[in-house]
Image 1 (cartoon, rainbow, N blue to C red):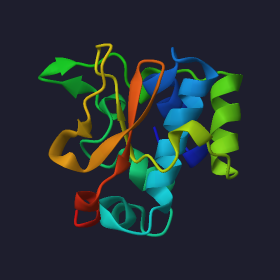
Image 2 (image 1 turned 120 degrees about the horizontal axis):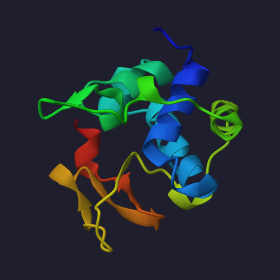
Image 3 (image 1 turned 180 degrees about the vertical axis):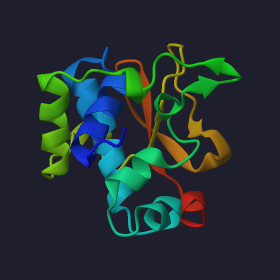
Length: 147
């Protein structure tokens, strides 16, 4: 089923950060919007000037966009999500220009399933900026610009 950008973003917010509270969901939404608006690097080429759908559906970026992982069915995917009002409110906020300040210009995030965030995002394209809930957020390094 094809979802419009608003619903696709709401589903991704719920899937990636639904258990992280409003701050965590706003943080993830901000990273998506940062990727759609960055003027350089891989995400600039993918977004073609701001296409949020292309950022969300870029292959290999979000486990939640995959129906299988490692050969097994991934039940926690955007197609199984049923967004509620809060997910749509945060999607509308982000699409309307809202950004969550503590994330800054972060382009990357992940849950390390640990109390510690690695100092660099894998391949050194990001350096730790902040931790919000269970997710570590990374701003781009000079290496990202050449991606």
